[in-house]
Length: 92
Image (cartoon, rainbow, N blue to C red; front, side, top):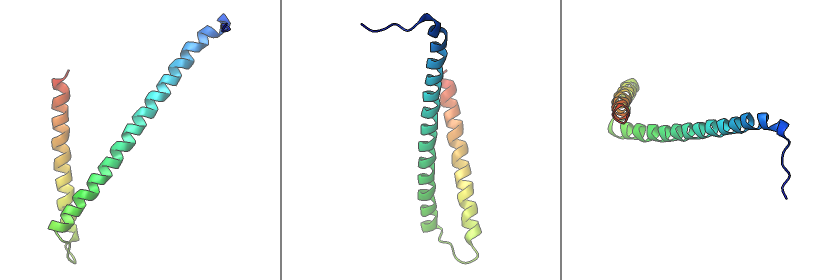
């Protein structure tokens, strides 16, 4: 037969259980963020490789390619952010 915990532990048990859930939720969010960062870095490398192939950097022209790359990434991020915002509002 299982022993029953004394009643004086009951008020403490629920906050401890809730804290455990919060820790798991935070760890889940951190893991998802970490995987998102890894994916972003992979895409960054892929897009840079495309720019290196189609806009080869010659001496003194590196800044132009980097500015084009930064402009492309900025425009892409703005478009994706706007699209996700509209999608989020639509699902509410």
